[in-house]
Length: 141
Image (spheres, rainbow, N blue to C red):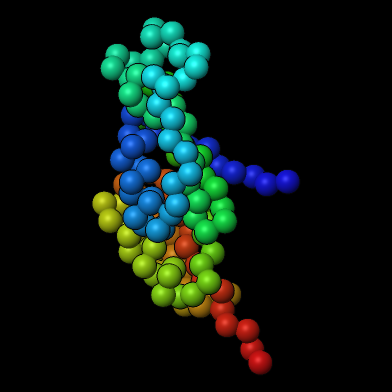
């Protein structure tokens, strides 16, 4: 069993997809627009001009899949009550991703060494998604 987050960006999905592609060096798997659906939603269910918006997209951060969409509203998204945790193999990778995620966002806990990790930090990105970024402590030999 796997759990895969599905985030709705309410009109900013294309921007978010490109941002995460760069921040994580993510691999984009799928991009499907409302217009491309074999059974397009009735236009009254979408804000005007949304047929070219993203109905579904997915990308991989390492082996972890994240799914995203514009959703069906242009109301601002509200990402509250959760954070996405990303474990990197190295401290350098973690610090690079943290720096990229913080561009236009808010650093909640600066990235740095802790008693349980080589580095750990929390950042809320420009879309309002909170990320916990870490690299494990090296194992004692």
